[in-house]
Picture (cartoon, rainbow, N blue to C red):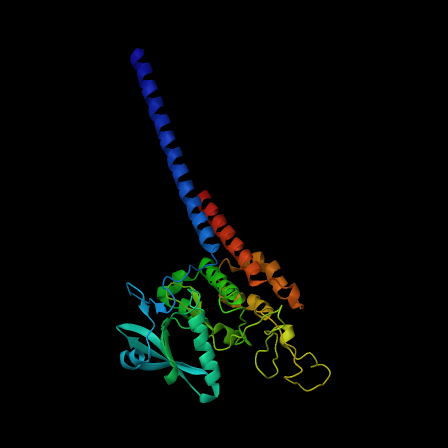
Length: 349
């Protein structure tokens, strides 16, 4: 009898020990999950981007171990080797080039008619260096050239084509796409509160033109690339902008960008056209996000969560639209909530 009781106590102790081990493992795994969610939320709450690691006037690309000073004219002329044309617009031509074993993008003025725009874009690149902006590698203003970091995926216009490639298909998830949309809104927030003042993206009169302003990085993030048309606005100081000197049309541009007398038959006049502010960028957010999300599985739920803020973005009166920061906060919340819910569902299985 004593031996039987001793065996029972031993089995009971082993059962309790096993139970405690399982409970400990469950607590640890749960803790890891919540730490992971918290880290995601913490990263999102930092506007999607850390500050650039290099001090002003310096850059660090690819496998460089330390920052280097921007290349100057002599270095651009001697050390940057032009390879092939990879893009061209009205303002500049863009070439794939090589510098010190690194692939870079070499930008040259395409037409003297757009010299002012070219120099404005260069000045903005110099003033707004941040991880939300493509890295400036060097420039030679007298040759009308500058060099930036090269991103092989190209512009955001190429998103579907990139995801269609076999080696990148596993990246085509609602998480990656929503993070890209969060990056886009984060960039707008940065530009609307930049070190160079409140800036408006004027090269955004169509969806295609807007998408072409952003580059898709190799780790599937966004950086703004084309800053040739980035005027400053001061609402309190009465400084408003007009994106171009011709009449804008279509549903993509904000209502305040349309000629207000178009239904009266009155001919467009740049002098009589009222100015506007950065809320034109907010109007376009739902359309850009819709493109980014595409037809990915889970995208419908993302649109459902963003419905209200997108509805606010499309208010006719720009004063009633949310700021980029307001939109960013909603995007962050939706991203964090959906990631947490996905982890809970996986844990339940």
